[in-house]
Length: 286
Image 1 (cartoon, rainbow, N blue to C red):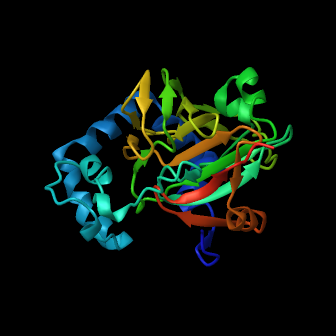
Image 2: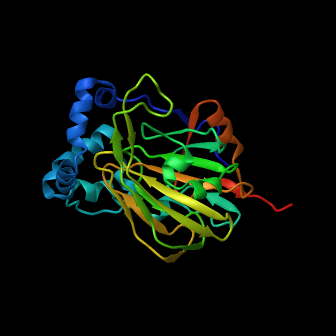
């Protein structure tokens, strides 16, 4: 059971994000940053040996305990960013009725209705906007949208939440619009993050949509499988530098989310969860 005291208030926008998205000069600069060429250069640097100079400072700044992670010599910043945790440090709840967290994160849980708008990585989406598929989105009305926000010091690999099968992954390219966003009229900038989703045909929780959300600029997502039969707790993929949110869409009547998580969300708090930890229970059939 999730403890009541394991909650945090969602962080406010950083000074950098406020400058980039809410300032005229910042938005002009952002238009340059989001160009594919710039993103490729940034990605190349993070994959290069040159980027290792940033690792030590990052560890010190974020108080990262490397004792939890497998020992190795990192060859790039991304090699460090995707470091693998020791198996004994993340226990998977293997009870078939237990819905587990796919990652280390700060979790909020919402019921999905026609008017639901969700804040994800400083962007705003309805479910149909997130998926770019109205027909698929309708299947999740009355169900749950679970948003797992990963911070820079979190473990950036994620796992499958149950046994099951899935087909291909669907990638949606991120874009930047100079129009009013869905919910905040005072801002005249709107962005959609790069994202990739997989429909998981699970044994215990129906068809769950597992969405990885990247950043507008770098936004690098690495999934391991397509057309695959998976096992609960098995690694599904990882975020390279720039990606940091997972969203699960669960059909109505399939799961009961832990009460503390729902209570915290209602009160405006996020709940700290770890990969493999129980966050809900399979709903019994009436």
